[in-house]
Length: 90
Image (cartoon, rainbow, N blue to C red):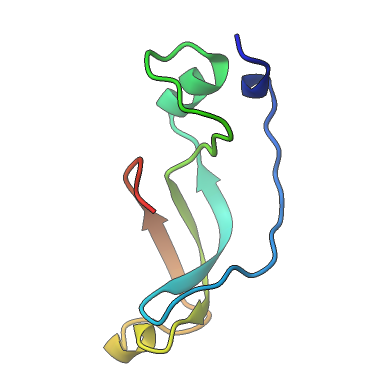
């Protein structure tokens, strides 16, 4: 088993840069799915290269809106949201 799989660290980051169509979300809860625990234990057939960040969905609050992201009128700062992505998306 690779040593990096044994450690899980939670870190806070400074506000990342976001672009005009993007939304910055303050994550309050993040889910970790069964496959991600297998990856962490080194028991999955396709292990990702480190650093590996488990979790593909989260919930929280809209922290900030890019200049054009707020134009759709459905999002506002402070709104509760759920976010998800597919593995490999950016």
